[in-house]
Figure (cartoon, rainbow, N blue to C red):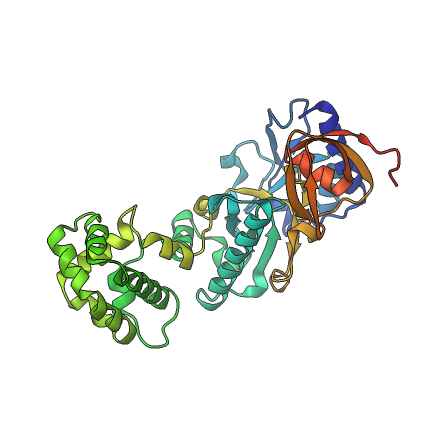
Length: 388
């Protein structure tokens, strides 16, 4: 990034922070804060200034307004002395339950496609928290990260003292990690929801797809699983129609049918290259497990700006997610003209319009220029003489 581009971004951030009112997180006095600034070698050489505490939201606001961070974070944990220089001296008091959804961990594609995909995961997660885990949705706070995902904050007091192992159990359930066919099938009953029915349905779909393949293909696929030989694969192939019928009528009896079924089903959920795993991932929520289990994690501050996109970190109510469009609702910069220099062609959507950027020097709205410069896709070339 050229110095002029870094200066341009910082100037626009300065303008935003001079006018924005950023709400402090709850119990601000017990939170640790961390910031990354526009240093001389940013973004090639960055370091976080952390172990910072504030006595009030006003003090936090003034700090941000004065120093203009490129990225702003606060702790999901509560501490007696958040500004202490070591974690041991801070005295941990508990932590919010956090789920991090990042499209980078799921797919590759255009920015617009990634945002659309991760929104689906967020809706899926909220449904599980509400319908299956019994979370009080009045305590759930949703935040668009400003990048390629969402943060789901559960501030229900019942979870605050959970240790990493307990949080891992929750995220394992949500992500479908460690599924036991014997438990979810044997304990199934009509009307049973959650993984009991999700696993039954995804297993049924997989077996139906398998039944459409040739006998040779089925044997090859099943025998590739660890612990499953040719003889067992042949037996399983013959049983597929019956297994599909049992999954639809009496799943709790399916594992009593044959040791072959137990072996194959166990391999399908544990083998790293199992053809069933894509089905499990589709039915699960693809959350970032380390974020949930880390009880001392720093996470983006709602209302701040994300210097890798120029977008706002947007807090919202759960009910607002369905209609939320990051490419419109997280954009805070305007339409005055700026001149950028692009090294290649780009095509993307922003503020409800499609932009086809051509290689070279060209005039674009400031919001587009900020997006491209922050993402390292262009350099600033100047302010248009006709800017308003």
